[in-house]
Length: 387
Image (spheres, rainbow, N blue to C red):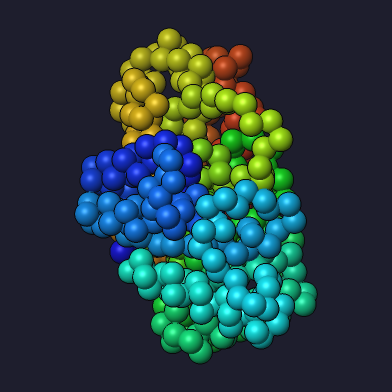
């Protein structure tokens, strides 16, 4: 199975939203997280078993990622659901010893088997492929393969990790040798400043695409929490991307694993996906485009103005799915890259037109974030690969 996978969240009604999105064809499955879905049902939070059964009833794919890489980050303390899973043995938390690795893997696999989902091995968030932690990650992956030969494997690294050049290539080569059927790949962030993606580090994301392609030659590759930026990974060889509507579903945000010091009610800003721009802009920006030219606005959105937050969620996922399916339909990597290159070029012209006509609403920074950075990554990768 391939396509758009919705990441877990804590909003009330999350299961129902996922079920409707999958049933409508706007998404293909879900990632459950030990941080967001409890083992035992809690107020406004269905149990993992109920959640998984609900997704399977609408023929969705279910992946349970315990997110050990997040648990081991400094400051991760939002663990009221995580703790219900009892994933650590007598040796304690961590993957820095054979006993800890084995005890943790046994418990993770036991929980996944109980839910009827693939056995996805946990890992550590890395900042260097030459670090001691990278060695622990390799050891953990090897133990996982020893426990279950068809275990899915995880890679998590920050921008420093992905821009490590030949050291990165050597590390990926060692992982490829494990012959995992599926690789779940995540770009971690030290800090997330806003809802828009940050691909300013061209070298790092080019390294990511190079790694995705290497892994995809033998295995399925899923690029988590990537949303529209994940289309770059699909061009390189990934077949599925993680997405959603909240910031922590579209990018790896370490603060989403922290208890907020201010637990007051926050009303999230409203956004509208602009399909032709490959961008998600604020609703007041979408309203400005609508006032400028309703016909153009409909064309840019790829449909009518979503009348509600729920409609926008489905519109966003449907737009992303159409883009992913178009790319996935091309078997040659060069053809996928050219299709995405053409899409970025068309979006750049559309941005330029909007910036010239309504500069107070659509800004040059929007184009840079949603178009310029993405295009630069694609061209850097394509040039290095001779494509």
